[in-house]
Amino acid sequence: MSGNKNSLITNVATVKELLVFFWRSKIWWLTPVVLALVLLSAIVVLTESSALAPFIYTLF
Image (cartoon, rainbow, N blue to C red; front, side, top):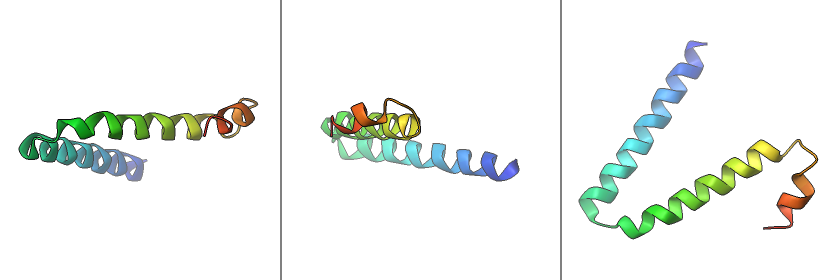
């Protein structure tokens, strides 16, 4: 269980580092692109074993 906790902490730290990079570099226009990729990735992962998968994959 601690492996999952460490992985989650690492992922949160990575997101925080990415946001700090956006803030310092003043490239906020890239934020919607990253959010869209994360959303699409979450949709694919969450629906890959469901009956909705064939319909989701036709969107790509």
